[in-house]
Length: 168
Image 1 (cartoon, rainbow, N blue to C red):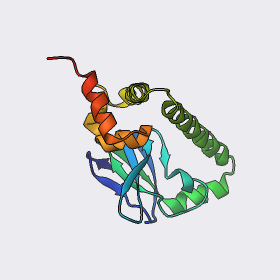
Image 2: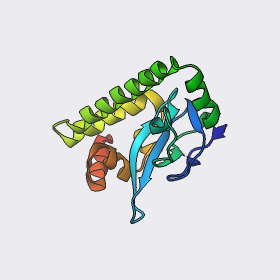
Image 3: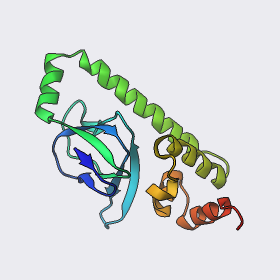
Image 4: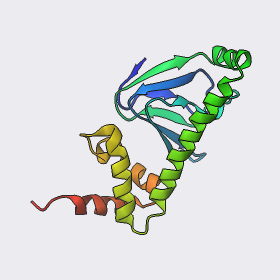
């Protein structure tokens, strides 16, 4: 399955299959009761999602939206869970997948604990560069979303991005 930038893979609260992101990037957005969206995760190539449903089924925690053109393999939930029952050694593979995701989240926490807002932004830009170059971070995320990922207000993100621009 191919998704273009901005297309939705699944919506918060729905139930359905699992997915393997073969290429591209997805953002997971959680919609609060008041309708405010908040970006909670970035899905990178080779991840299987939703993470919280890899061992047992649960409704989707957030809405998955393509940040760039993305190729996705749909995984039948019933087949996935049947395979787990028939081959319990696959639980180790899931544990390793979740361990990798935990390490990624630790890197994100590292970004959040930088001493200055400029360093937070630079670390996030460097992390994204691996996946989106030659595009820039602001080509795939709004300033609000960048701020949500690194704990800054949109206005601060705007000021920092402007400061990075060469004088013309």
